[in-house]
Amino acid sequence: MKKIFVFLAFISLSHEVKLEHGDKPVSALGMDPSGARVISGGYDYTVRLWDFAGMDSRLKSFRSITPCESHRICTLQYSITGDAILVASGSAQAKVLDRDGHNKMQCPKGWQYIIDMTNTKGHVSMINCACWHPKIKETFLTCSNDCTLRLWDVNEKEKQLNVIKGRDKKGRKSAISTCSFSKDGKMIAAGLVDGSIQLWKSSGPFTRSSLHQYTAHTPGTETSCITMSHDNQTLVSRGGDDTLKVWDIRSFKRPVNVATGLQNFFSVTDCAFSPDEKIIVTGTSVRKDQGKGELVFFDRELNKVNSLPVADCSVIRCYWHPKLNQIVVGLGNGKVHVFFSPRYSIRGAKLCVVKKKVQRIEDMVHSEISGPIITPHALPLFREDQPKSMKRRREKERADPKLSHKPETPAPGKGVGGRIGTGSSLGSYVRKIRAVENVDLDEDPREALLKYDKSAKENPFWIAPAYMGLKPKPTISRGRRQ
Image 1 (cartoon, rainbow, N blue to C red):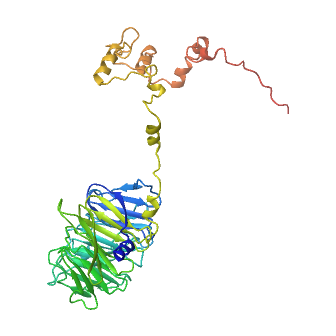
Image 2: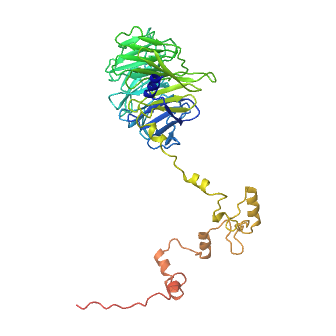
Image 3: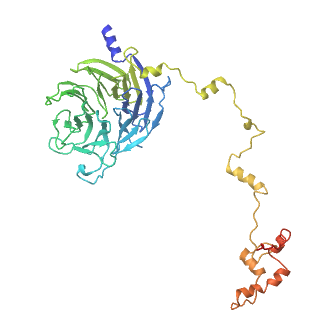
């Protein structure tokens, strides 16, 4: 019993923290390299960001976004420097976000009417998986139902770098369900829907796979995860045929070890190595009200070491952080569990569980003040009675003589009582009262104006009367003496 307890503490299962993501399955998980933040995504199209150092015991996420509209999230992964987040969803376009969840880059979509997929600028079907290059921080890999893997560069937003076609044993196209880099970045591994596992050299050429195993898993099942160890020789695959297999790529004809009876209902169920790579962990799926989903631990020979019932739902995603020694698990009920040990784990969830709950202003108001809160303008003396319906408001306006006053309409014809008629304007009115009759068109305009000079001076009518009291007296200026 003592050995089992020490082992449980070492693999960080003694304590647990629960994060509320939503109501639907959590299909994507990621942690930054430092272990300060966790990112989760699910079938509810939502991505939530969690900061261990910024959370208190309420365990609330600091941001919630929907980066891919109405597409379920398949993959979330931080870059090797932690400054970017790779998002793959049910759409044909992967996205790259910055550390705070703002859009940084979106892959273009290809033209689905082109038969040769190497001639398109991007995927034309839903993306199943994506991952960053372990050595080059700007490069990432995606795989899709359009039977291709594509290498991308964050700085190249118009087109992918390379296209790898997935083909079965007979050379026919086959959809790709998962992909991964080796730890040194020199190999690309992919799991195909035909049950095969194929590997290519990342430097190319990509015409044919360098290594392939066409009978790795049951044909027609989706291989949900492929991961490689740091020795770049051991490969672990989680199959849709309820198996977990360990492979040696130096002898790729048959698996080294096989574990069966591990139910898998999701195409994104994970398998992962422990920080020292002596333990392999994966999750199991269960149907509703038919048991509990478990975290199952195996050694390198796939001997079952331990299992932990987690919840009455499927265990989909699991991530064992190498620095924190903490296990983050995504469940089918929309929750994220973080397992840690006070002795063998560092930082991470240990930072937030010890913090006291920060009391918000709303909580202080409701807890410290009893009775109703009345603001001065809420009193009847200051409050203006607002009608509850538009009908009541219209009735009040109709009773008001000013609001219900009908404006005067234009007078018919030439106008009556000082009102201008409908057919006249100010210009026509002035022309009528000052009409000049018997205008001779052949007369010189200057001579015509000078005829009124004498009468304008003797009997001014327009401008002179307005300036009569302000007009200065003319003065005679004497010229300068020579």
